[in-house]
Amino acid sequence: MKWFKLISESGAPTKLLRDFIRAEADDAQAMFRSMVLESYGSITDGSFALGSATTSMLADKFREYEISGSTLTKGISFFLSAAKDAGIKVSPHAKAPPTSGNGSAKRKAKSPPALLAPAVTHSEPTGHGSKPKPPREAMVAIPIPIFGGQDGVIYLPDHMTAKQWEKVIKMTEFILQNYRDTMAEEAAVSESEVTP
Image 1 (cartoon, helix red, strand yellow):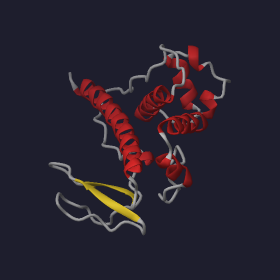
Image 2 (cartoon, one colour):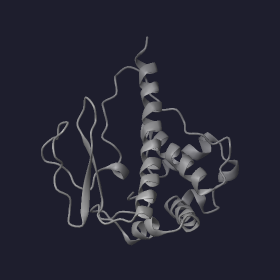
Image 3 (cartoon, rainbow, N blue to C red):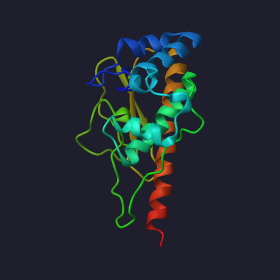
Image 4 (cartoon, helix red, strand yellow):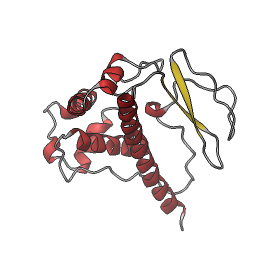
């Protein structure tokens, strides 16, 4: 959400997020398109042939952000999904590259990207059924029970309208779906590296 300037560096909702939540469907679509175009300016500004790019060309362009490996794959996957939802034409030959590895060592679990990090960190781990740390003023904490694991939590502004909830649900689903998809791809690659 920081990448699209929907939350500040401290995790507080920005005016853009509030405007996006309140926007009608057509306006929200236009706003989302603008967010994608602005956030990926070096790729979408016309100086890069996005409409005819190959996977290799797109990966090289993303490497300018100084990322590699699974982060590169996740970043490209997220961009391709966002571009599709925003109606931005991308070459059908541009795909997320597979993650690379030599297969000699198991990968360590990585923490989620900053885009999905909670606005407030917990000093103590929370187990299933435990209460999350109180949110900042004018925010509400929504606990997400994770069977067999540590519970998650989503922080949102309180007093949202039904329309705002609908927008937040769509945006959250989009972010989580794309994150889950890239994690599934990474897990498949990790399994193939471990299999003899």
